[in-house]
View 1 (tube, rainbow, N blue to C red):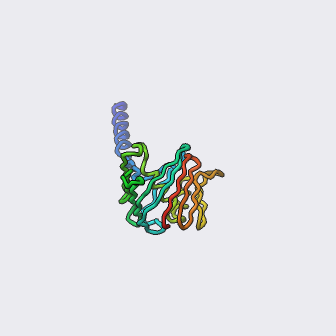
View 2 (cartoon, one colour):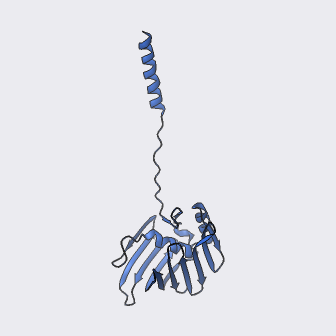
View 3 (cartoon, rainbow, N blue to C red):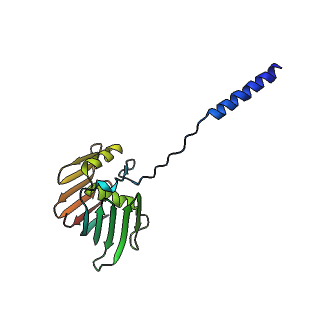
Length: 188
């Protein structure tokens, strides 16, 4: 009789434990991000953090692995999002980026499919978004952000990983960590 009573108590205890376990739903991170370093996950800022709206043509000179590339872009960026169309010298479409409503896309007949649009948007934001909002977002991913009116730096520890120099007619970004740079020329 005692063993039967102990068995019932064990089953009741087991059922109580089983029923009292609350499960938490898995929270999935749906925000767009880019890794600025191997471990620093930079979450893209909302479009209303842009310093000033733009609707303009730009000339781009890019350098990667010892090769230089030249192309034009039409950029529309405002509190609704970012739209960039890349063009060659003859006006042929090289690619289109759209970043709005929490979604991002990039299509191109020329650039590799492995090129993630979040990285293009992250570089754009580092150049043209509100410095104090960038500082907060970068600190949240373990990086330091130094800025003046004409320059910006993203720093990991004591190492500068990204340098940005701004003048009224150009913006130059150098990514020391990833080994690329580009200059944007326009009426900034």
